[in-house]
Image (cartoon, rainbow, N blue to C red):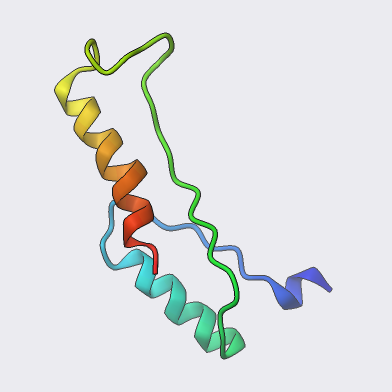
Length: 73
């Protein structure tokens, strides 16, 4: 029964069009959308604070974590 009522999708949180594509796939299958669960997150190895994180990793964390959620419709 659950398979008929759910559509689990994986999307790259850094891909600006992936969330819209996922919504389109959902609307194609069900005709409406009730819930979106944005669950993208990465982080440095522990223990860490912002100061010792390499700039490239910090930028990647920002790109995936808050930006990925912001892109989710």
